Image (cartoon, rainbow, N blue to C red):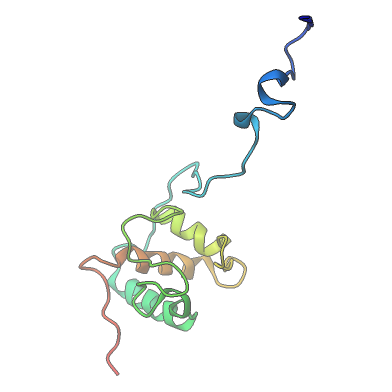
Amino acid sequence: MVAAVSVGCNRGTTDLAVTGGAPAIDAVAIGPIPGPVEQETELSNPYSDDRVALAEGRKLFVSYNCYGCHGGRGGGGMGPSLRDEVWLYGDSASHIFDSISRGRGRGMPAWGKKIPQQQIWILAAYLKSLRTPLEPEPPQP
């Protein structure tokens, strides 16, 4: 025997015969996919080509113990490499600023309320200088 059911509205319906009573797999939210956070406007870093600021960024990297997770030259350790060409959360000036300021999942703390924005921009400029001719050399002991 075949039974037919008539539905007057399609709003909120799911084909239960196909899914066995559970929502269709493509209707289940799985959460945000890691990747670059969308920026409304791209901000430029005022320190990006300033060699004095880049050297200061290297000092801040050490004094804030960034090397403890990211390695002495940013090559990675417990935290990810900052010398890679592709970054999970984006490598633009704005993305790096946001990563430092807001923090990221899996261990990156939010520094935005602990250090001044100017220093975050200087750190971001230093990180962008890695793998480039502008990268400051670590001080010699």
